[in-house]
Amino acid sequence: MTTVKLPENTLVLVTTGEEAKLFRVDNGSLAHKDNWEPTDLADDGPGGSTPTDFSDKDLNEATFSKQIAERLYAMAHKGDFAKLVLIADPQTLGQIRPLLHMEVSDKIIAEYPKTFINAPVSDIERLLSDD
Image (cartoon, rainbow, N blue to C red; front, side, top):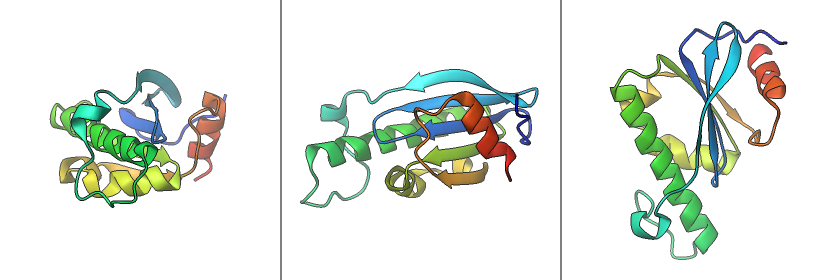
């Protein structure tokens, strides 16, 4: 087992434009907390302006990024986490960043532009311990 060198109560979000997994640092390792999937994509829409050449897949991924940002804000506002680490493919990371409320972005201690959604927890822990 690899020891994660992050503060307790750090939330680790591993995501793509199609799904997300949440982990919490607990006694130096990652504990799985939740899985998020897009909801009501047809009714919700992405934040900000949408380029006219967006495919349905692009639109759905942008909408899910907005949903992630909103859920993180709700959690941060309730004090559900002290620090945040984002691990996302580069496109999703780029979509999420501008949507994050300052209350969330102020808690970010690391970002990794990597696709780790299907990686075993041990690989995620190794990534987080290499810093």
